[in-house]
Length: 86
Image 1: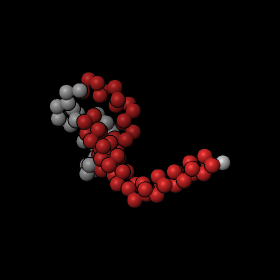
Image 2 (image 1 turned 60 degrees about the vertical axis):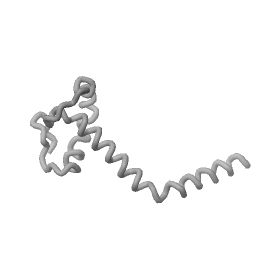
Image 3 (image 1 turned 180 degrees about the vertical axis):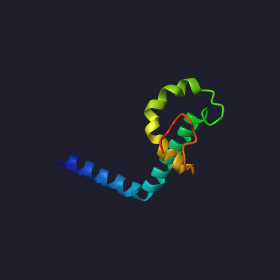
Image 4 (image 1 turned 135 degrees about the vertical axis):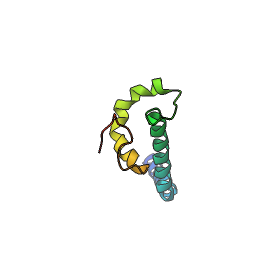
């Protein structure tokens, strides 16, 4: 019983501490995802990517997020001719 109360107290404490930073953490995660997608699609955009061969196998997993990414980057239409999402 005492151990459960301590776990609840710790959980509550962690939530109170992290509450003001949730938006900040979410924004940072979104920025990291955007940077990763830029790195992933850089070869298709004409930017040399030294690890293109290794990132090529990630495309099927990331293609679903491509539309949201290019809209966040300010591109109304898909910048890639091989990927139609709009």
